[in-house]
Length: 138
Image (cartoon, rainbow, N blue to C red; front, side, top):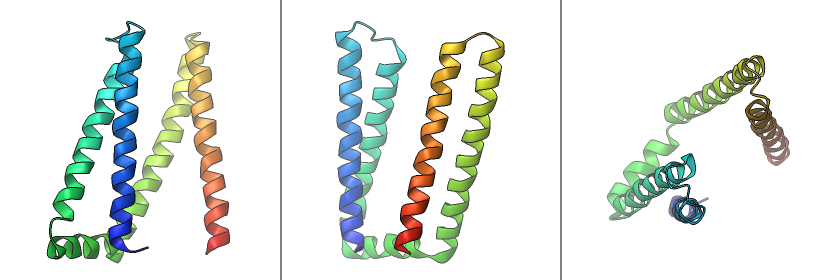
């Protein structure tokens, strides 16, 4: 995929974050739960989207800057770092989620434990689906 197309795809994802964040804040306002976590999460999604959109315009401002970022992204060392960091984050999330389920179950917070379990299960299923799809393509 050409780098400019990759950047455009990231811009669309950032716009989706922005819309989702605004919808979460609006939903929290409609349900009168403005102080709830949903409005905070919505605000954080908007901040992330704004940073990503800003980065898109900084990178695509001129060809030299775009080329510099493209080289940095395709550098083998950077790709290895990204892959290892993603793997470490995935493993840490799985372990921490499992521990949270155990602790919450012992504290008789079964509803919260159940939702964390669902989240963990969804993540693992998504991982395996992605693994098999990517494996077939390569």
